[in-house]
Length: 210
Ligand SMILES: Cc1cc2nc3c(=O)[nH]c(=O)nc-3n(C[C@H](O)[C@H](O)[C@H](O)COP(=O)(O)O)c2cc1C
Image (cartoon, rainbow, N blue to C red):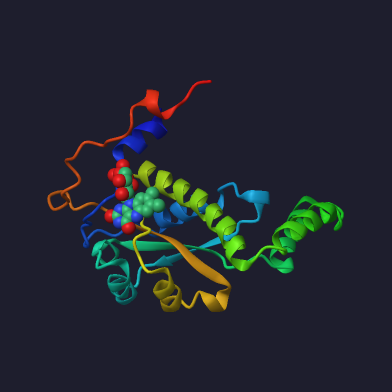
C-alpha cells in the first residue's frame, strides 16, 4: 500500500519553490532507482544527466516551450538514450556480467550474436525507438522513488529534443534526449494544480479481465 499512497500523493508539479533544494543523498536515490530499472536484455540503453547549475536550468526554459518549471525546480534530470546500437554497446554489459559473476568470457556469445543480428540490421531511428522505451522504464521508477521521498517531480516531454541535445552535447556521447524530470519541492500556495483532484479512468474501464 505504501507505494500506492505515494502515487496518490504525487502530481505533475507545475510550480516549484526555488528556495528549496533536494539533498545530494536524495538525488542519488532517485537516480539509483533508474539505474536499478529492468531493461531489455539488461543493456541499460539510457543515461541520466543531473543538472543543478542555475545557468543551464535557465537555458532549458526557452527550449521547453517557456515552461518555468525547469528553472524553478531544484534539479532537472535528463533521460537520454543510445542513438543507435553498436557491437561495443551490446557487448559491454555482457562483458561486465561475465566478469562480475565469474563466468566464462564466451558465456553469452550466442545470445549477443542474436541481439546483434536483430539490432545492427535496423536503422538508427528504429534502434532509438527501442532504446528510448528503456529510458521510460527508469523514468517511471525515478518518479516513484521521488514520491516515496516526498520529493515533487514533473514528467516532461514538452521540449525541443534537438535543441536539448545540442545544449548538452549529447550527440558526441552517442545519446539523444528522451525525457526531462525536474525535481524539487512544490510551491504550496502558487501551484494551481496542487488542490485539484487526481483524475484517472475508472478501474473497470482500465483493467480488462479476460
Ligand atoms: C511522458 C510524459 C510527458 C509529460 N510532459 C509534460 C510536460 O511537458 N509539461 C507538463 O507540465 N506536464 C507534463 N506531463 C505531465 C502529465 O500531464 C501528467 O502526468 C498527467 O496529466 C497526469 O497527472 P498527474 O501526473 O498530476 O497525476 C507529462 C507526463 C508524462 C508521463
